[in-house]
Image 1 (spheres, rainbow, N blue to C red):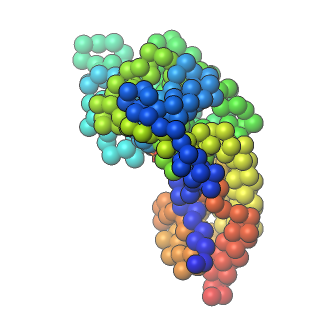
Image 2: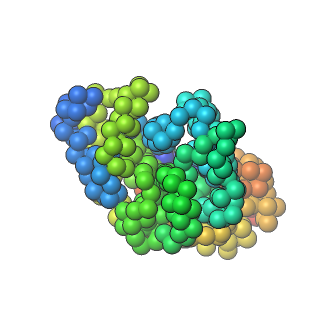
Length: 346
Ligand SMILES: Cc1ncc(COP(=O)(O)O)c(C=O)c1O
């Protein structure tokens, strides 16, 4: 069967042969009874990697995000979010449906709160006011752009959060990509956050799962909420085993994805396509095809005929995500196909 070059997302990555083997051999127990040694190993490892006291293995990034919000808030509270964030836009309204919180969205171009806007978004005291209980961040920012936000760019946010005594939560679905692009250990990038969520099923190529990390007390409460949401798992070691490989073996190869993304970017620009360069790029390319006279949907349909898949973001823009299942020769093929299509050779 001809290879499908799937650039829609890094979530499409298949577990590696080593992951499959680890799944087969995983020692398991009942995780709700805290008897699954592989889950315990994963949670201890992740806590160490994130520099936090404890961590919790959950089914998905969405579940980790929503659990975090539930730990910090009560119905009627407010949380501050980026208007373009996943937690605000792509979690089926869970903030209000599950936590009963009111999100207060703040516009950002680059994944950093402008200090004045953040201060304005935090409710003053008052009997008519909701209480602002959480400030959410996202790094890399955002899912269609993948910009790595530098540690030092958070200083003002940290200061405001401290002054107002509001915890900081990091949706770090792709924080390993951000850390790799910034040449940092991931713990250095989240040491100012009260808690952090990361996806194991994206660049790290595990079949599913996410980690939520924070203080021991935070994780204890998070574990109860995970259970309440029906997220308690039994012999979860079979899915924790590939996640351990994700954390120990796949992080170091993310630079390859970033190099491939750079090759793709240069190739696309050479074809006259505009690429979003509004920050430090990671494994995500956001491209505007209007300069070459195309609309993204028509180009995506054409590419699909050559077994190349990309995500359409808007009339003019598309997303391509580089990941473990994409090799340099796939990039050459994609660039060649796009070149021919836009010149209407075929
Ligand atoms: C920034 C961000 N946060 C959270 C999620 C949710 O992850 P999941 O699909 O595992 O629920 C995603 C998924 O794409 C994401 O990009």
